[in-house]
Image 1 (spheres, one colour):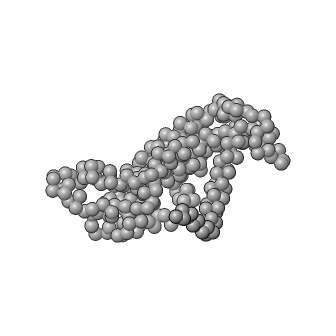
Image 2 (cartoon, rainbow, N blue to C red):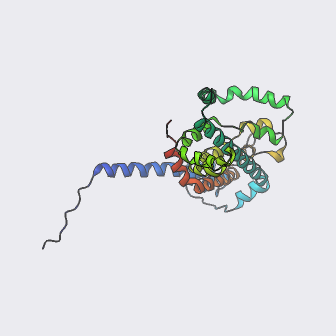
Length: 281
């Protein structure tokens, strides 16, 4: 009996596809690896030409302790975390409830309201910068937490995403809740909101990343150094004539950690939310 099995022919299309994906992964990971290695180098090694890939004089935790002590990065980190978490929670809840109402309640002007919300996405953010700043001056909200949180009470993208996802929720479940005597808010919190967790996970990653990297608006609003966010603190590591690159890369490395944690926590719901977020009316 011939037990020799024929080898499957090599499918070169698969080989090239995998090679292309591996190259793309390496290209995306290289900046993060370079950032981490630079955080362990001295400024002289970072600015040297040609630069050394691996540190010759390992600084270990020196750059990290310097950026935490000299530049008060611990305070900036907590401020950024506070603003990003609060704004993300507000956007998630407001977007979910508005998206649910626009998807499941039929009323006059429903589609007009939705179109108006989408139209705000077409307005460049810099065009609203001066009016928003003037509003903060009128309300006397400069250098307050309200000025930072006010601009993120709603998200047109979040409303659009939640509305599209809400169409996939069966109407029979909502009607069953109404027949049991549940109010609309109870139906939303007990039935609808748990079924929107995939979309919420995807939106949470986007929103947290946007708010975590926000630099210009907090820079315009805040004058008290104790309220500065992490992006403003990173800018402070660069002097007028000399840049201290070692602590700067250490600060950048610290700033990436929360984003990675949020993504790892929501990666499954993120993928499922993106896959199911295109449900059409």
